[in-house]
Structures are given as C-alpha cells and as structure tokens.
Length: 322
Image 1 (cartoon, rainbow, N blue to C red):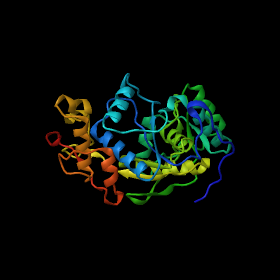
Image 2: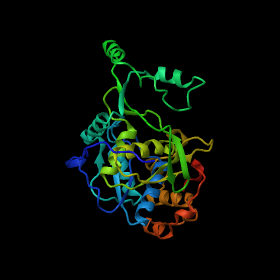
Image 3: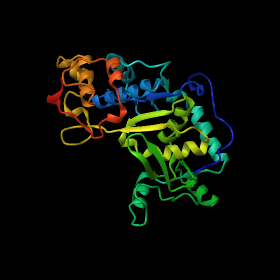
Image 4: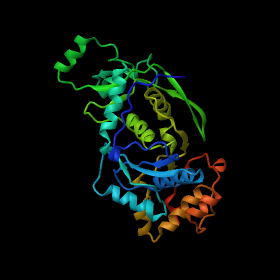
C-alpha cells in the first residue's frame, strides 16, 4: 500500500532535533509513572540485545505526556544502569517535543486527513458495542458532521479531539517474532480533547526523528503497530522493524504488577538480591543462562540468538526469584 506524504517536514531543533541519517537505533521508552518491574527490565534488556547485536545505537526516551510521578524517572534510569544497561546520547523527553507533534497534525490537516471528534468515551463504548461495529474500531460518528453540527457541539462547550481520517480499514506489518500481522486501522486519535498529543502519533514522530528503525516492546502493543505503521506512511516517515516480545505474567497468567510480590529492583534488594542476581533471573527467562548462573550483559550479547527467543510468556513467581 502506498500513500502520498503531506507536505512539510515538521522537524525541529534542541531536544526535538531531527537526527535521522546516522546509524539505525533501537530504544526503550518507559513512562515515568512508577518503578520498573522485572518485566519492564526484561523488555529493556531484550531491546538492548536486539540493538547492540545488530550494530545499532540504543536510545532512551521518557514518554512523559501523561502520568508523571515525582522521582520515577530517576529511579527508572538508576535501575537500568544498575543491571548494566548503557545507552547512547541524552535521554529524550516527549514533553519537550510538543511542536513536532503539532507540526505533524498540521501536515495531516492541510492534506484533509483529520477531523474534529466530540464523542465522549461512553458514547464511543456504546457505539462500538453495536452489532454492526468492527471490534475495537472507532465507528466514525463525527467523521461526517456538517459545519453547523460542529458549531453546535462547540457551542455546547464540548472540546474536540482530533482524529485521523483513515483511508484503510486494515494494515499489515511484519514482526520478527510474529511474522505478518494485519490489524485494524480506524480513525485513531491524534490529539486528545485536552490538547495532549496521543500516544500513537507521538511514538511515530519520535521514532522517525530519532532515527529509530527497530522497535522492541511488549506484545500487548502488537495491535498498535499497524496503526502506527499506516500513520508513518501517511506522514512520509520510515516504518521501523518490529519485534513484539511476550509479556511477563504472574502465576495466574495476568500481567505482572506490584501486588505480585518482589517485582522491582528495590523489592529484590530488600530480600538480599543484587542487580546482578536480577539480571541472572532475566537471562534464565530468556534461555540465555542456567538458573543461578552469574552473567553479564556482554556475556548475554555473545550468547544472543533471536531465532531461539522464547515465544511463550515469562511466568514470574516470587518464590522463583534468585
């Protein structure tokens, strides 16, 4: 599928500088809403291994457009360094890149590819639960509003979000672990009604601007990849290589959370386990080491083979920690 790119490049300077054109890069992009748990650290290790094993730079980006807990960023960066991860260049913050996102929305708007949406979350849920609505897709309620209808919505005091006017119901990406994957591409939100850039827009703009051509992250985001790849194509931006890895789950098969025991580096330290011990646990979960075997990141890099990467989730049990 080919799409013409809207005009303009929307590239800035400073922390929102455009530095593509260097060697490719992978990345880890946490949200500073709390401590990283072992599943997050495992994903960071895998992203580092994918990047370093292919000669790419490894970048860190703080996705701080939503919830930010005081001190969380410093704690997260400290934990990553404690297990031996290094990264290239300065840490980038999304909150300092707003003009890049605004420029991308403006480009799409000039190309006639956006519209205002006044739907509440409840209205969307009710509409998407209707028998004729595609599962998980926005039904296009506001897509065909007339100018008078839009004016009436504004007069009622309801601030609009900005949505993409998608021309494709589905889009296919290739994932290194999942193969070809086809997902829904609906009229996704580009800017929320409070003015905050939406996640799908921000990551697409950021990845291209930072020269990131390899995205390794949890497979809970696999369904977002077709939307993001389609949006990148519309903007004339590069689409990265994807690798969506299985999540860390608790003993009940649910996503790992704080209530599941000693799941953070601080929790593990309180039980007498060092960061090196935690790295060993992560390495064993990746089939790169035997349980209890001392390891280092250079050793794991030497053993790394993505073709032997485990395709099943990692079940973390607190009593199985080092």
